[in-house]
Image 1 (cartoon, rainbow, N blue to C red):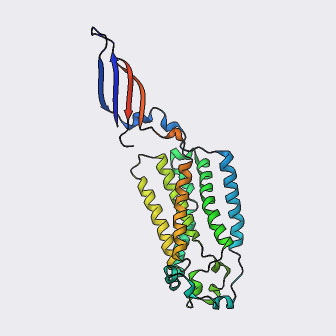
Image 2 (spheres, helix red, strand yellow):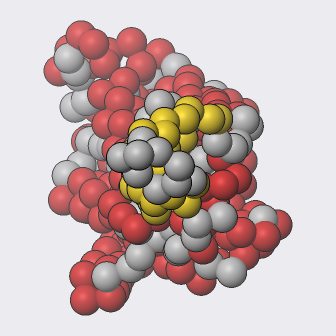
Image 3 (cartoon, rainbow, N blue to C red):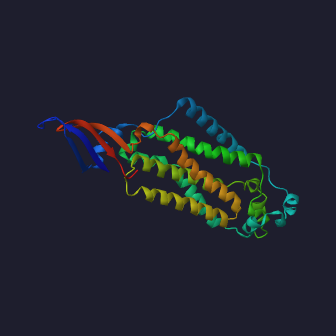
Length: 286
């Protein structure tokens, strides 16, 4: 960043006018001292955000009670399943089944849900905890309404239902109809990428912000792989869930970012040198 000051010298010369031009390096803290950091990072629009969050989270609460209480498959229904009806890209998934691998995804899933509690450890974010919690509920609700609606209105048999090596009683359970689309990676992606995005917005100059994004990607990717090897989802189910979840986690904070908090790349300020003028500050890192 460079501070380019241009002004007029009102002393000493016959014309009383002289140009005074200087270029000096400006510390980032000087920009912070102008008050940018005191402006709230996020801004809610209650007329939009409150109804949206109530509707999406309300629907999810209702739909979850339905999608996990579907009728069990009948033996005849199971016998009529034909792997040849599965597209070639997805077909290999029916050969995978592992309870222990699927449990890894469950651990990551349940571990990622309470992540907003970690916001309390950060001094900058602690004061906005309730606002951030509301944005988190909104992000999860948006992901959830897509997931629960897909599972509620469409039945797709999970890969393990085609696998004769899987215990029969497990294949017949009602949850075997809930393959489309992958909810575990979607919700893990929303939660972890939301946290990474929020941290980056509160600490834009932090050198470790990419660590949070990397951990979010690892958590989401591991969940995706575990659900595939566990026989829970086809690749197409996982692609949709793994794409939708992180997008929601990133876009909800981005769309609520306070425009007043965005440091402009070029700023004009009064200049008080040997005379009067203006100071042009341009951030070449933008």
